[in-house]
Length: 199
Image 1: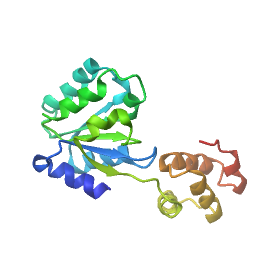
Image 2: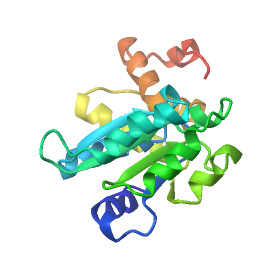
Image 3: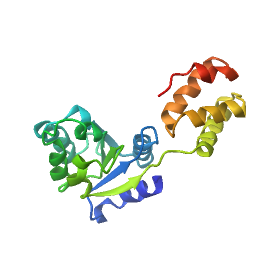
């Protein structure tokens, strides 16, 4: 996933599709991957939460400005339009169509995120994008991340507790890491998983 993202952004001038849509369940690392890439490539990241700007006028003002202006820091830019589902999940007021029109003339790489790329209201936009799926993480991948963090923080937790935490997460790594942090405050007591709220 992240290799495709890297390749898209670093070869943007040659890309036929002028935006990239990262899609997959909540907590699978879509937004985090874009932030990490911007740091790695020393790009100015302009992040816009689509659910905050639902009408065509709002989208044109906010996204249009980001796509046309040069960087404040004399760097190349990466535009992140996050949570497209926020537009699609509400009464359609032209926001999706406005984004589709704006990306056609984008001077900088544009990365969009959504939980469900097959949402009917996103159809006109999805057809203009290259898609990369961020699937829900399975328990083995989660355990790898947990153990890497525990090693770095010099913390210990029993394997059964970590497996239980991975299973209950439903593939939401971000949520699982929040739960892991909560459990660390409680000393990773075996029964502490039962005290966590269900998502």
